[in-house]
Length: 152
Figure 1 (cartoon, helix red, strand yellow):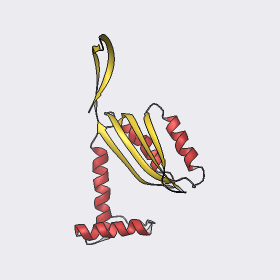
Figure 2 (cartoon, rainbow, N blue to C red):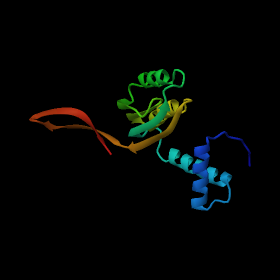
Figure 3 (cartoon, rainbow, N blue to C red):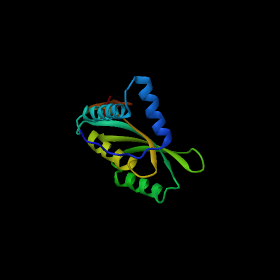
Figure 4 (tube, rainbow, N blue to C red):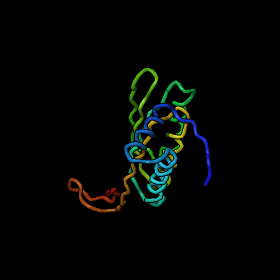
């Protein structure tokens, strides 16, 4: 077994301690190991090439040097995955971004990771919904056309 040191905000450590007490963990180490196991299991559950739609939400400090610009450039660099976005000013320094994404799971997770691993980003969550993409020909308003449908 390996040992490593982490730096953690007081409020996040308090959350770990609360979880530890609620679930009956004997140590912080065991609680954190289980959190990592759960995250790794969730990440492995859906194959990288599976089509998906996803919602990425994250809170960030817009006063962090050039962070807003880096986030915007990253989204522009992956415009093929981005469907829509919403930006909310929570207070003088904090913003909430919500992005609707669509594409292969591996690409969507890669984009989410590149956004949420930036210094100044916190409270990030990616919700992935695997979908089937079908190519159909049927009528819409009296005219037929070939197009795709995304079915969750």
